[in-house]
Image: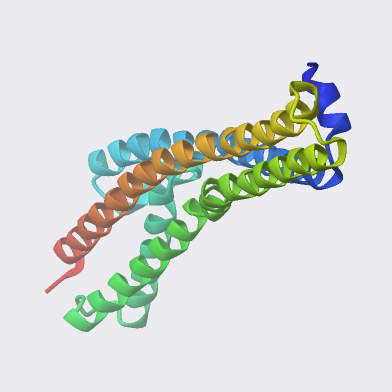
Length: 220
């Protein structure tokens, strides 16, 4: 039996199921390649930016690195913290940073971190949906194919291989298509989730480090 011939000759419902699964698979693979590229860049540039940040003696020395490593989520935290710090110092240049002002700085860093987390998690929900939904869509196609096979047995009143094979084959194709869409999505989701958690930890550590430096330089 020819694989493509089976799909062409399959029932309309199974063809629709296969088309839906193919769409899920195409979109999930596109997201996988995109997320792989963006997360790799984020991690690589974060390491480089953090190296420059820790070697610098003042916050203004990091501005050039911030422009260069825009893919790093740490850059957004640094820029947000620097802006808030400049506003706080501008409002009262002579005074040191009080605990309330440091709390404002912390909130600015937290807001920037939440924004970056949202960017990192963008499109992850589609991978999760693909991993959880596509096996059931494939299972629906499987059940329909088996029902079609039994229907043909009832019509021709024969359970020969020629009668049941096409229906069983298209049912198994639907199962395989569902797994083909789901397995890479689940693996990629778990892998990317781990890498995003690493970046979130880096952002938390960076925020604490930034606050510590600000308190040391401008605190009472």
